[in-house]
Image: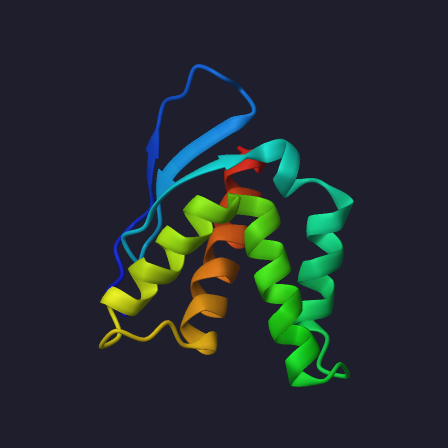
Length: 110
């Protein structure tokens, strides 16, 4: 997967963060959703190695839907697929999502 530095865009609403991921996906996140306990719950389940892979995959999809909404989630999947011979593999989607989580967490600490 091609990587580049994250790029921030200025926004008018302090709850909205717009940036381009290192993989090149342009996203717009509502930080209220990012800090919602339901999103956190899905991420914790996704990262829990004691949970079955199927459950972890469903948790990842739940997290993406909650964070992005349906339309942006589909665009995210397509972005991953465009970089991987037409397939949005679980590992590729997970890697990009975790990159977004780490970036947003670092950005808010500034």
